Amino acid sequence: MNEIENNNTVEITLQAACDYELGYVGVALLELVCHLTYPLVFNKLRTQEQLGYIVSANARKTAGDVRGFCIEFQSNTALPTILEE
Image (cartoon, rainbow, N blue to C red; front, side, top):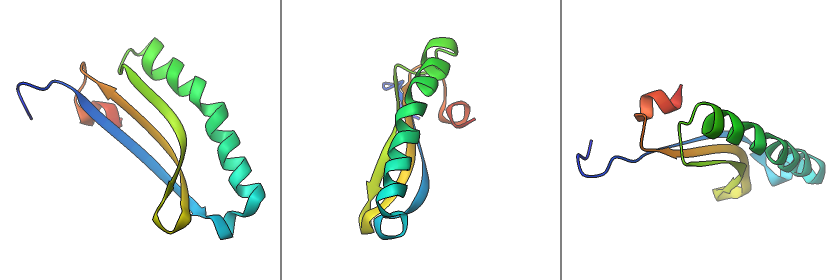
């Protein structure tokens, strides 16, 4: 732990599948889930629990066209182990 820097970041990615396996409908459903989840995640983690000042939920595309659901947040009030819970 760095004594000068008090920010902690956690990113949780739940892998779905590649574009070929998901198809157009699967990609659209993943994007829709992310779009609908963002306000819930923001409200719970930032507004109610006040854990982070950067809170995001989005679809992530990685190497090999693999898509996933990603929640990320940054906090200066809690350690990563608390943020992961």
